[in-house]
Amino acid sequence: MLRQEYDAIVVGGSFAGLAVAARLRGNVLLIDRNEIGTEQTSACGTTLNVLESLGCLDSVLQVYCNGFIHTPSRTIQYDLLYPFCALDYQKLCQTLYERSQAKVLRANVLGLSNGYVETDSGLFRGKCIVDASGWKAVLASSLKSDFVRKSDMSFGIETTVDYQGEGLHFWCDSGLVRPGVGWFFPCGKQARIGIGSYNGHTGLVPNLISLLNRFRLQPAEMHGGFLPCRLRKSTIGNVFLVGDAAGQCEPLTGFGIRPALYFGTKCGDIVQRVIEGRMSLEDGLKQYEGEVGPFRRYHTFLRWLQDNLMSLPDAPLTRFLAFISWRPVTHHILNWHRKHSLLEVTFPQ
Ligand SMILES: Cc1cc2nc3c(=O)[nH]c(=O)nc-3n(C[C@H](O)[C@H](O)[C@H](O)COP(=O)(O)OP(=O)(O)OC[C@H]3O[C@@H](n4cnc5c(N)ncnc54)[C@H](O)[C@@H]3O)c2cc1C
Image 1 (cartoon, rainbow, N blue to C red):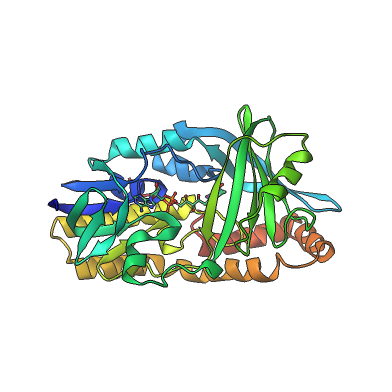
Image 2 (image 1 turned 120 degrees about the horizontal axis):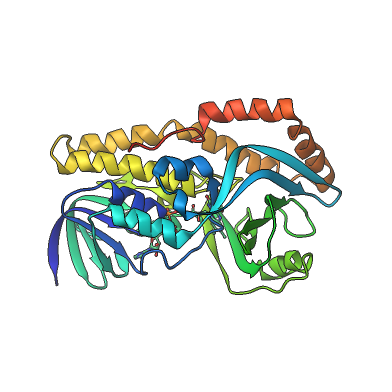
């Protein structure tokens, strides 16, 4: 069996893995089973300031200043105090990849075995190992069989159709899915339309068709997958976990791109210090855990809202959503967000 040694091995070449790799210099191996940037699983909506801060504004497809929540009885409009945008997945991945010096290996990773990353193309050893393989957390799961729990995951599917529109749209409607949401993210000449179930129900095709029928649209190719909705451990053994592998995707909103990019960048900087011998691996793992720690309270609160708010019947849920669209309340919520979320963090250059 092939055995090669690297300064760092990053498993997963999507948002989290590329954010890590973009910060690393040295002998780095990035492993993904797919070609980088080709397997989009997400609606790719995020706050505009993430891409601005990363210097990736060229991947923006459409900007939104307004959000709309549709319930069976009314449509509630919100001013998005932070502009959102839809991004071009392939373009963003390509830009981040071009910033890295990593060697890419296209292979299926099977797990960790005696400190080696085991793949269908051989075994590889790294001084630092990062699991950025998404919700399945392929390395962590091989170390701890119950690391991934289905009860802590939502599920979503979506399709991209030719349809133009404005603003971010969500449906909280028991006629479509409960507990769950529908969404419509316009992006230029097309729109990403999807349905998510908070209890991880996977049979969502009829629900998606029902949402598309409201626009007299037919589904095109569909994609989707699970979204973790509970923060997991951010290290296991000597492995750093980033993005969905660490359960960093936000519950309730399902927004996982920002945390994946943010913690990926932080993790990359720490791993680089370990590679250069400026920090021990043990200290690096501890420091990374310390970076993720403050996010836990916010994450737990969103999970509480997901469990308690989104199962309410349509009428009280509509009243609550209308109440929070009132500007003073929206501002209050935003201030809370400023303190606890990653909304205003900037990415190190
Ligand atoms: C339908 C849907 C819509 C979503 N919409 C949004 C949205 O609009 N905004 C938002 O912020 N978030 C959204 N999310 C969540 C978001 O997609 C994730 O949080 C985000 O992709 C996490 O990034 P990641 O890099 O951690 O993992 P992933 O993007 O899942 O990447 C994991 C990578 O690892 C590779 N990999 C996995 N297993 C192996 C293996 N065994 N061997 C080799 N390679 C492997 C995969 O090929 C992939 O490239 C959505 C999710 C879904 C399912």
